[in-house]
Length: 301
Image 1 (cartoon, rainbow, N blue to C red):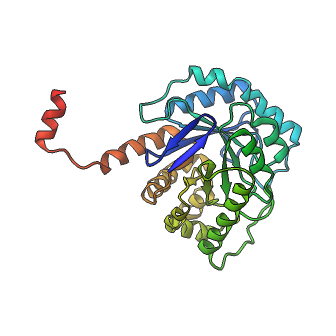
Image 2 (image 1 turned 45 degrees about the vertical axis):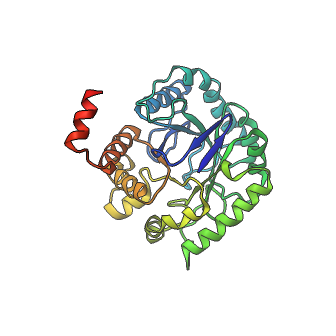
Image 3 (image 1 turned 90 degrees about the horizontal axis):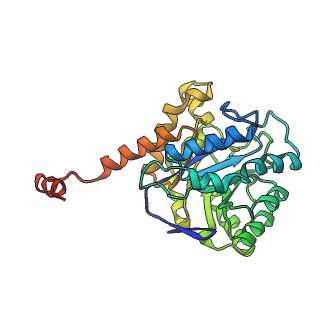
């Protein structure tokens, strides 16, 4: 399986990719956002050194108890980061050789006007939380050869959908992705441009989230990389009674381990260093043990 981004291809299977989160806003639910461009850039640089393969920047919080910012303001916040991204990419040091040596840049926005304004600026992925109601964002991605992340949800972003009921979530999710993939391909993208996100916590309640995580393997039928945005999610609070988002990293790592077993390829994470270390350990545990003879040969090399 291949993910196509501007000028590069990422081949799977490989070590799962870690998507580090940079919030260029002042109302992030996890309390780590900043409107200071220098701080945002410093955060991105640190996330890369901690093991991030992708940096996901967003200028507007997805919180439904906050009003939207203007299109102009969103573009301005993103531009303050994008202007300096090429230099940051040259300076950043990666954590190890299994990491993408030139991390990818993802822009988290759903507004077509914003996507049209920024996707030409060394952006690799459009992280679209709108559930792709029209082909417009897919068409913009096709123009710039940018990968598109399609998230499962219903209704408009920034609106609460806690009332949503799913008689058969996985069947409806399968139908949703089949239709949105068709829409994206008709807009000029190819399958290799697409990433799928089951949308944990978006128009889903506790039991819905648990079900989709248990049945995630059903989505492998699409043969596309699956992204799990597991970091500090409300699901962790639902199960552990942990209302403080910053205290949910242990729960996040449990979801990471489960997602790896279910075959997810990308994980969206706040605490990248902890996730990187967890992946290293999981990888070591998956490898077959060496015999004494193999260990001696390895030491002689």
